[in-house]
Image 1 (tube, rainbow, N blue to C red):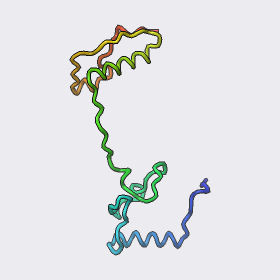
Image 2 (cartoon, helix red, strand yellow; image 1 turned 45 degrees about the horizontal axis):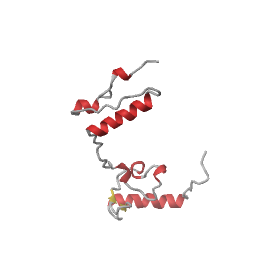
Image 3 (spheres, rainbow, N blue to C red; image 1 turned 30 degrees about the horizontal axis):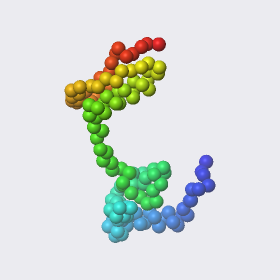
Image 4 (cartoon, one colour; image 1 turned 120 degrees about the vertical axis):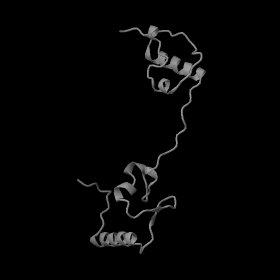
Length: 127
């Protein structure tokens, strides 16, 4: 069932849109331009160039397809100890956890991937 906010194109508007797309593919019409001023290749399918509804995009763009740069999360010795203290305080409930600092924390590839890194099994009390 269609919603009321969807605007339907007439047969004439649809025909004009198809002719424009064919002209762009043939090189007779200029390529469509996205929000950043970059040309969109006319051979890219509509389901790729149109952004999802929740991004509230007004025009076709390829920005939602590009990888966003995210700064890496770096942990130092003191911040790792704070994270562990916060984790233990929030997960063990009424238990009192000693504030231990981790000395000589060296995280290599395996250490970063280890979910149980610096886990203290003595602090675990089964229910």
